[in-house]
Image 1: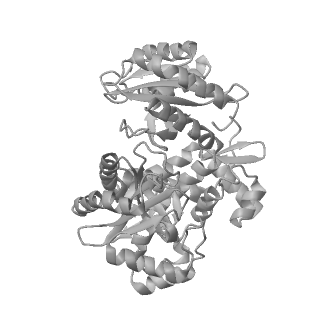
Image 2: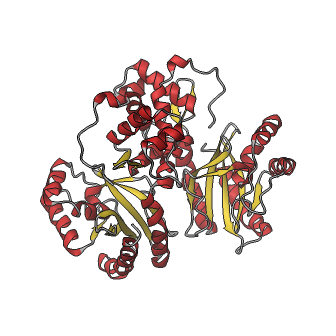
Image 3: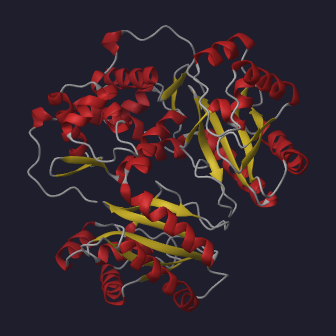
Length: 258
Length: 258
């Protein structure tokens, strides 16, 4: 899914307004759902006059609402994410298999791809279980502590893994999160040799996951798929025994489609 | 949620590059997940040279991937939709109540707002049931045949409803879809007087829904919430009997929060 390495486009070929406008959309978050012009300017590095023009444009297009001095995103922003969900082959092909798997096991399942430091969820189903809010399309989790992240990292050449680890902060999400670079390197190597990765409550307490890589017909790893189980329901050994065989079946099936 | 009526911004205040760039993202869809520069130009009304610059910019920012002459959206696009999901009050407040309701009833539930001709889903949970792929955040359905749509339309003044209906094509999604303007007007009036709307297999065969409006503390209708059930599981009367009381409870609870 990564953009192939290429010489960068010439600067005159880039549309500055688009980059800045998208950064304005991304400047809204849970901590600050409503922002003033000055706050958007601060968060994006734009001048106040420029932030105002971007907000007025987004308001004019219906992506941002305004109440007095405060701006907020509107649900129309969801359209943009849906353009990916509807157009991209990967979620459309993976989703039915994910549902089949989740309902057969009666456990939550998700698929993701690497995007920088994070795994971004491209398809998910809760199978009726309330497991974690991280299991929703579009949700991002730090790759170093996610089972999907570990199998996706394991697909890279060793020098890239080393460089990736060196760049990370390896934030601790729970007392179980592996934050030592050397231990993470060992876990990634283990994921590569086993063909799957286990993560035991490293993202949040109570959440255990088992992930496998998804390959296309050429054998390239294009995504990862995992089952997540509440810790009270299964030990890590039970998850491997119970969930690995159907995951491997899904893997084999998807290889012919991807 | 709608942008208040105001005099339009001056043209010089708008950033043209942002509007066009967002239209390039929206030009990818299920029928054409991979597009050439010329195809993007055709779909957006941009010149070929401009379409190329927008695609190169989106590629540079990681929102679009390129393989030879074909461009496709990357999962990074999901970030934009997530900015809304994480920042907006509405989905964050509605979602826990939606989950509670869905798991109590063991039926799928969703909440939505009007966006032009469509209802856009802002929160959903399947409660373990495979009901419809329309029940996902960001998914759009034609408002005229959706239960959420009918209660949201019922919140408008009559002259706006009439104008809205007059603008619609009232496409038939199933043999049950109400496509006659006068019949739709009656259904919307009924939703207003009853305080809820029922839709029996008008979006897709086998899908029955019951929706209620969600009001904020000022009494304004800000969203709709619905339960969807497979037709084989309950008659329309059974849905009203079984699902309306807990929906009204959720409505009362949310009114204090919204």
